Image (cartoon, rainbow, N blue to C red; front, top):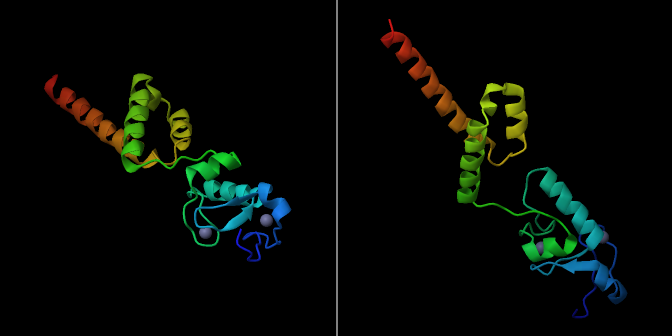
Length: 140
Ligand SMILES: [Zn+2]
Ligand SMILES: [Zn+2]
């Protein structure tokens, strides 16, 4: 703390040194009340965004999120893809694709993987359709 006037970047209340333990300083050195910041993070996550600094939009580090008790891990593209394959296999092994409504409910729980899963499902449905028609053609 280098003598500058500090205020929470969300509610703009000034922060004195007594309050420092209920505040979080982000890597970008912007400062917030814990309660203001965690509320903001929850809003970001609800909107499907990675929590970022409200002032400069820099992503908030995992350490800061842990301290705030916010559970958000941004997955990489390859992680999302690996997850999609795993979920897709789960759907196939459990024949979940036979029950459309519960299949949709299941997929909706994974917004990041949703598009991949749907693409894979469409691929399979198409294959099924082709093999079905071919069988019909072959068997007299
Ligand atoms: Zn505040
Ligand atoms: Zn910032």
